[in-house]
Amino acid sequence: MAEAKEEKHTGALYEATEDFARSRDGSDPLRHFRERFIFPETESGEEPVYFTGNSLGLQPKKAREYVDQELEDWAKLAVEAHLHAKHPWLPYHEFLTEQMANVVGAKASETVVMNSLTVNLHLMMVSFYRPTKERFRIMIEGKAFPSDQYAVKSQLAFHGFEPESGLIEVLPRHGETYLRTEDIVEAIGKHADSLALVMFGGVNYFTGQSFDLKAISEEGHKAGAVVGFDLAHAAGNVPLKLHESGADFAVWCSYKYLNSGPGGVAGVFVHERHARAFDLPRFAGWWGHDKASRFQMGPEFEPIEGAEGWQISNPPILQMAALRASLEIFEEAGMEALAHKSKDLTGYLEFLIEGIGDNRISIITPRDPADRGCQLSIRVRNADRSLFEKLTSQDVFADWREPDVIRVAPVPLYNSFSDVFRFSEKLRSALSQS
Ligand SMILES: *Cc1c(COP(=O)(O)O)cnc(C)c1O
Image 1 (cartoon, helix red, strand yellow):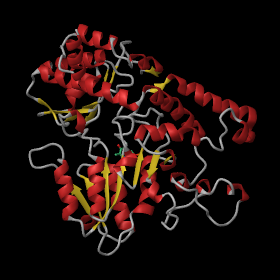
Image 2: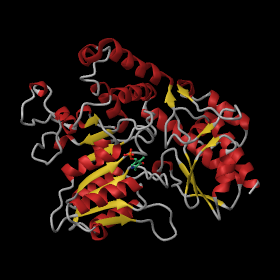
Image 3: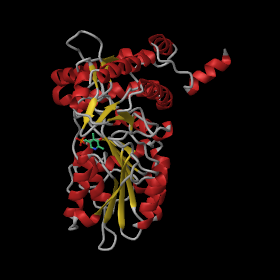
Image 4: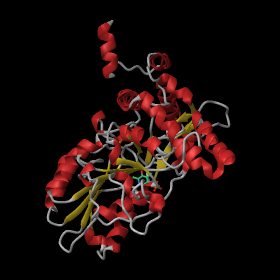
């Protein structure tokens, strides 16, 4: 018995049956978290296969209660709620700091929840992208999320550099679908004299590849560059040790794996070595001002030590209330336990997709579970959207990326082995019709 159990945990004992999936759900210690979320309605009335938590996480049932509480305090107390709400608005962002820091493996003093992702990326580059005539280039992963490409190119232009010569994109080798760490390291070394900033994703949105943040940080620093990460697809998806990685800064959104709702308020990490870097340029606003004297309304900006000092405006309480509902769940579940289930769940998905045995489909996500999170990106040879549309018509929420990739993300917090099994059956059926 013990032996079989052990094998189960390594995921070696998968079976392509509904009973197997159900029994794995039965022994899943995280299964009850599914009930804390609201799944979208479908026309058929069937429960959907929701595999787009990498795009917009589901609504925690508590989100409404938490947002309602703030609406109620606003109604009852109005301006007094800044101090006297059940959760006072003045320090509201602080209620999120520690739980958010735990999600990304940072210290609380290195973490702040504010603004939205691309805005934060720009704010971080204002402070940490300090190009000189010789050292001005920015390195990113090839096929980075478009917003990141626009952001870094516009920063180059803002400082008077040509994006063509200033931007270095590291691409996979010919015939390969994702990057090798050794190639990233080599690219950094090759451009060591001219690199000002290495800005990589934590998990690439397209391939689902999870990068070695520590190796990239170390190599970037060795080259004399600043290192930052965009963790949009990593936060809440893979266990992170941001502080230990040594990165200078990181940014991430919270509406994907972190379930904060559309346009949810985003996260920022600034390594503690910069906590008192008051000489760095930064775009200042009153919320980053020393808390003790903020309301003396003096003319000189005195930043708070640590990540909070990068805040600008007083924050959106309703958005933060929704995020609080989700972060509490993460705290309860724990990133390690989630990551453990995630490897198993995604391993099962991989096993079933391969079992379909259709040579038109291939997985472009790394095969080593250490190099990916929960997302698998499936390439469909000679594809058009019709296969994807057949999936959608069977109540599957997946994501189509031109020209030929379907992205699916079984999220360990609310997806089940049965979801994975149902998805594979629907994919098989859609393939057989096309
Ligand atoms: C989702 C995502 C964005 C979106 O940026 P917003 O500012 O939140 O609209 C940017 N970059 C990456 C890598 C993303 O995955």
